Image 1 (cartoon, rainbow, N blue to C red):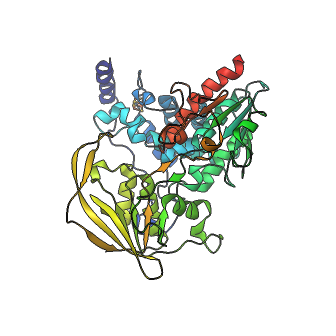
Image 2 (tube, rainbow, N blue to C red):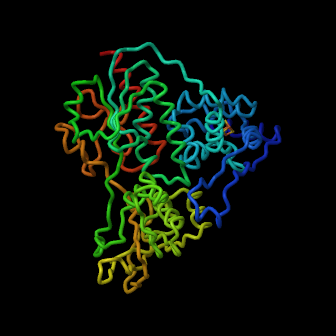
Image 3 (spheres, helix red, strand yellow):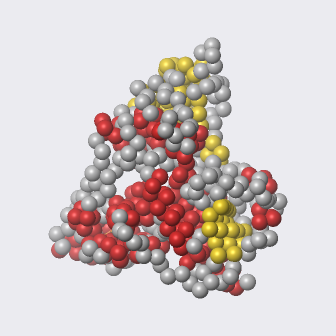
Length: 477
Ligand code: SF4
């Protein structure tokens, strides 16, 4: 079936004289953007979006949709952009995704919908993410925003804990189905990792605010500065609600457990990004939170968070910024686009390198980093080739900051304060994979607190699964 479809659609592409090359999206030049916090990618104009959308074959069996964790009608919204029905395009998107402006920017489409696009077999796939971003930006620029129809009130009360991507999806889906939804957030502003973890130059705060405003217009209530498990326990809150969803993410940073990690100048990626993004350290002294301007910065790790830290350090004025990663470029988990952006901006990559010791000066500040070289062995459990230490390969690098970006565990507060909640050995909440149901009556969970740190769209997909099951429960109880 796949092959027949392939041939038919590629045949159609030949007939339509489809351009196999996608329309480029303009970006700030590297030598300018490396010193400012403005968004790097500038988005499509209307003309660019229409031209790119016109490449879509509107396939009879669109494989791109299979790759989308929230099942967006991808050919449907693209078709509408191609015919300049931008209102219809955003409406189609929002039927399945309440965060199109966010997803259009930070979702790894190249591993999900775009990798499945039929045009990718002969050239570049349709730029689905860029078109999604265009539709969301077009809507944000309009004087009025159309709100979808909300079903008649069911009188059922839903508690959503955590206002990151998973919680937002649950809240957005359940409010449309007529439930009364309140979203609790531990920080003083909503958005979770979107707000504290992703820098302004990749996802501007105003974009997240627009999406949150939209949810509030739908009627979702928001309570910030409320740490469930500290302010009040989940047990007690369940007396006030019919169901609850746990989406508190993975915010507990891992460290390397090497000598010197307590020196001044050593940060977790979470601390560094939270200071700069959430607390607006990059605007100091206009904003109150200071952030030290380091000269030589090493970021340990190879994911998107590591790229974000390195690029942030450059923008704060660092002279030299290094990514130190124990595997090779082939195994780098960051999106290719983020790796290329970092490289263009001047980040220096030390592959097959592992930090072993951090060395301080007499005042307790980091001054050097001792590393060793690695080589790759056989694949490990993750399927990636296992890094092996090369004996006698130690070397030192002068460094005044080290940012550890090697991953996070789930936030432990709710698991630690909720008797009966089943937790895995890794600290994640155990759920039924098909529904997101936890071991506790009336409680569902999803996103990074279940999977460990993953992507925005996977968290949203988990939120959608849980929302369906919660709705079924609420309407059948
Ligand atoms: S985006 Fe690609 S796979 Fe999806 S409908 Fe268009 S051409 Fe087909």
